[in-house]
Length: 103
Image 1 (cartoon, helix red, strand yellow):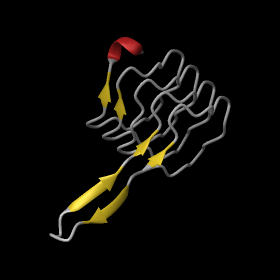
Image 2 (cartoon, rainbow, N blue to C red; image 1 turned 135 degrees about the horizontal axis):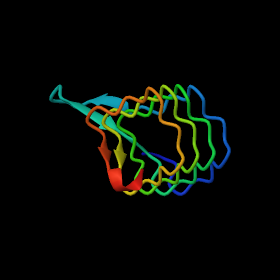
Image 3 (cartoon, one colour; image 1 turned 90 degrees about the vertical axis):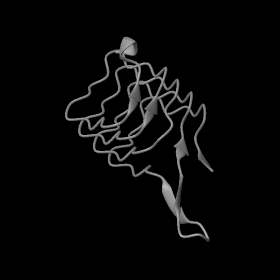
Image 4 (cartoon, rainbow, N blue to C red; image 1 turned 180 degrees about the vertical axis):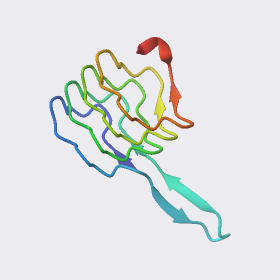
């Protein structure tokens, strides 16, 4: 699995990062996604603008004051994520799991 659980990415520049899932084809022809897991990571003050985070597991991630301009978070799981002060301009959130109390 692709995992960055509890990683310390505070103030990191992840601009344009491609962290969308890997797609595998099973023997029966069906597709399986291998999602990137960043649960519990510290992304305070990080620049994540223009990043592709579709289907990412971002449970409990600290995004305090992070910059997420033009970020693709479709189908991402942001359960328990801390989003205080985060800049969320033009973010795609279609089908994302998000706890609006954390905004």
